[in-house]
Image (tube, rainbow, N blue to C red; front, side):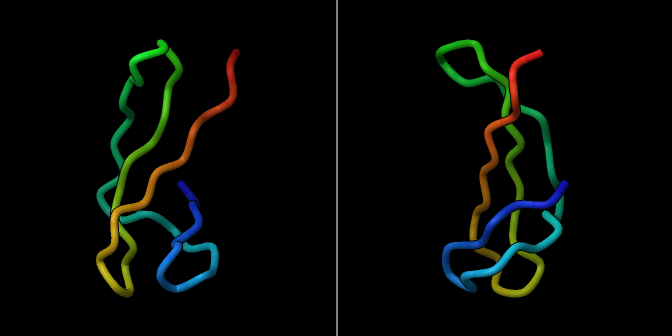
Length: 47
């Protein structure tokens, strides 16, 4: 899963990406940046 790293300021492939459910019921992916280790988060589209 690809996400945007706010620290590196570029799109990268998430490391250790896991699917999570937010409080409002929507799905999201949570992982880490492979370069700097910063947490990355991507909200997935509704189906």
